[in-house]
Length: 112
Image 1 (cartoon, rainbow, N blue to C red):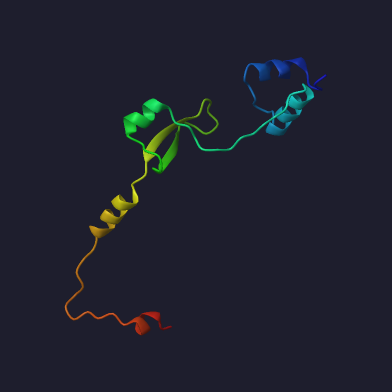
Image 2: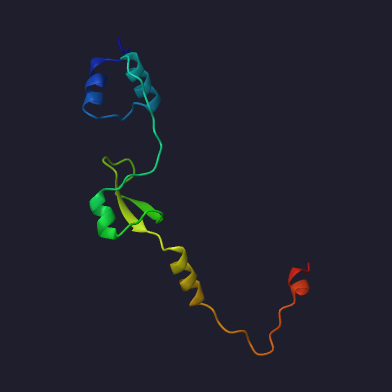
């Protein structure tokens, strides 16, 4: 019915997908009369993590993979990106006064 041997079917049902492409899995699922729906959307974080990290709607976060590539299940560290205000304040810390007698010439800066 599926066109693959029983040992592969057994491996798939045990969650062992090494050597089986995503395309082959989709083909097998459709042969079983099932529809496949792939949804790409925002990540939903657990409420406990949102509260623990004080993450608010609109905050930028970065998901950093932990462990080896291809390791299942994949785990991530959640890092909260600095806000625009925090970035601006960090840039201001590097601001230094201009030397005495400094003058800015727009034409000179854009020449060349």
